[in-house]
Amino acid sequence: MAPPKKHWAKSLSEAVNLSTTIAAAVALGYFGGRWLDGKFDTEPWLAVLGFLIGMATGFKMMWTKAIANSGPKDRDEKKQSGEEKP
Amino acid sequence: MIFAMWDEVMFYLGPIPVDHIIVTEWLVIVFIGVIAYLATRNMQIVPRGLQNLFESLVIWTYDFFSQVIEKENAARKWAPLLSTFFIFILVCNLSGLIPGAAHIGGFQPPTSNWNVTMTLALITFFAVHVSGIMENKLHYFAHFISPSPLMLPLNLVEEVARPLSLTIRLFGNIFGKEVVLGFLLFLAPFFLPAIFLALAVLLSVIQAVVFTMLSASYIGASTSGGH
Image (cartoon, rainbow over all chains, first blue to last red):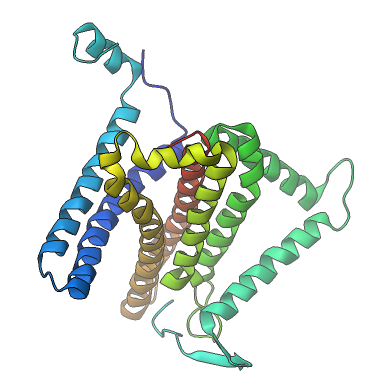
């Protein structure tokens, strides 16, 4: 069975959104960390930590979107091959 | 076009400075208000003319947002806000294409200023959380620690990244469009800008659709019990 069809506008928005949201998450983590570094005099550790958290958030968002967009066929195949718990 | 940036103050309302962007926003609000007044001033049981057009639009938007938000009552509740977003952003984006925009005082597309786009994104941000709390009560907050409490920092960054992304995308696209058109008009005043003007209209519509759709899908996700 093919994945359920989405409204074109929703698909367009999700595609346009993912790139900028990932960039925003990384920028937010880095600049937030840098600001905290200035507050607590811990340069550069919180900026690095923030950058990594931002990157992890980006990967998480991509992963969530990929799972949500994988059709029932993909999941059925994984179940049959034992890759995914039923 | 944005070649002559109008960031300076036009006049003061008491202690409050009023710049060109605010004046353009007022003009956009008046324009939308006048159209809405004309469409509804003489309502008939059998609609005709503008009333007919607007009734069809209202029915279409309810159906459209019902598909995205999925919960019928939530869609009916939030469709007016989302439709307003779409109309306001579209008219703001297109206001930069009026001949003389950014050269005549009080004519600069408001969405080419990040203060305006951030305000719209913050309205979405609060609408998402309010709708989530209204639909799911305190269970709504469970999504912050989903699928594990260890994900709390990532989920919090994601929540803040969303309005930031909405802000930057709309501002960046419209500001970029204005700058490119301004340069093109400066370099080649005839023929060439016409192609880009068509692209600018397309971009304006796409950005209005994207902002509205994302706001609707965020509200849909929060009302359905998580993201």
